[in-house]
Structure formats: structure tokens, C-alpha cells
Amino acid sequence: MAQLFPRRANTVVRAVLIVGGVFLAVAPIALLAWARSPAATGEHARIDQPMAFSHAVHVNGMRIDCRYCHAGAERSAAAGLPPTQACVGCHTDQWLSSAPFAPVRRSIATSTPIQWQRVTSVPDFVYFSHVAHTRKGVGCETCHGRVDLMMPVHQMTPLTMGWCLQCHVAPEKYIRPREDVTTMGWKAAGDAVAESRALVERYHVRSLTTCTACHR
Image (cartoon, rainbow, N blue to C red):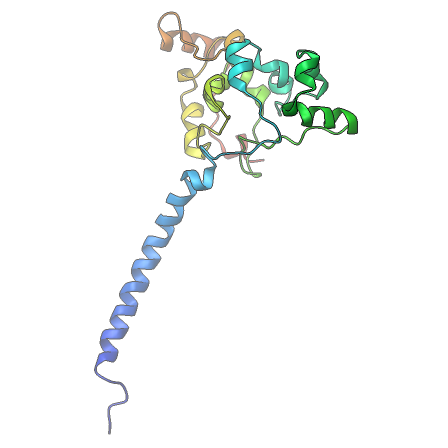
């Protein structure tokens, strides 16, 4: 009886099995690596905004507190954005009539908010509350970085589950006095670890690592 398959069939089958096995082993690892890369997390991604707003000028130069624009940061889950009218009172007529302020004039004329694009975000299946963090002494720059030095502002941290758990497992490494949560470049005056541990006790900070703490 004639041979049904050519001699090279065995070699082809072995090659297919080897390649398939390598793919099944490598694909999950590659997917996990990609999920933690800046391409997936949005870290350092450039976000185009409807108008040029300089955090460096307002925060670092003019010393405007973060909570002037993001008033919800210490009283609700979302930090929020300021109404357009909040931008008007600080600027002269010359500034307001300039070309860069066209989106502000258009927003006021049409009674519609400026369409700012979100810079820092977590997936929809993650629950994050600003007030829960700021009231426990977690500084803005812990998650957002030194926005007072950024031009333009970008997501500074990966915000992956592993990154967030670093703080949840050992909160004493990240806690600061509540009155300094918006202070950029804050440094503890004395023993940072000892001071943070005292604040953990004072603010009743818990080490929350259960799934339901962030996934509800």
C-alpha cells in the first residue's frame, strides 16, 4: 500500500505543535505585559485640550490651591472641574478678549461647559473616591505627580492594581497631614515614617486589600 503522507509530514506536525505550544505559553505573558505598559494604561500619553491651560503658571507661579478648580476632591468621589465663570474673575479684559480665551468666551455665550478631556482615569470596573483619599491624608501629587511642573499635564502614574496596592498594603509610606494634601513637593519635617505612622493612627487609616474595596 502506498504511503498516504510524504516524509516531511512528521516534521511539519512537530513544528506546528512546537509553535502552537510556544504561542499558548507566550501569548498570556505578552498580554499581561501589554496591559501594564504605557500603551494600555495611558501613562505619559499626550492629551489635546480645547484650550491651553498652564498648571505650572496657576499652581506653581500663582500659588492657586488645587481645590479652587477641583472643589470636589475633599468632599465627593469626583474631584470635578470649575465652571467657566471661575476663570473669568481672575483675568483682565485684555486677557479675556485674547485669542487663547476664545473657548472661554464661547462657553459663556452658549452656556455650555468647556469640553476638557480627562487626563487621569481608571477603568470603569474600578471605584475610586477622591474624598476617601484626601481625608485620609493622601496627597494629590501621589497619584497625579508634580502637576505644578507639567506642560501640558499628563498621567504620571500607571494606576494599575499593583501600583494602587502598594499604598493599600502600606499606607504609612504615603500619608501626610491633611492640610498638606495639595502641597506640591511636600517633605516631612522630621522622621517621615514615624510621622506617617502617627497620622495613620490619627486618621484611622485602614489597610484595605479586599476586592470589594475598589471593585463594587
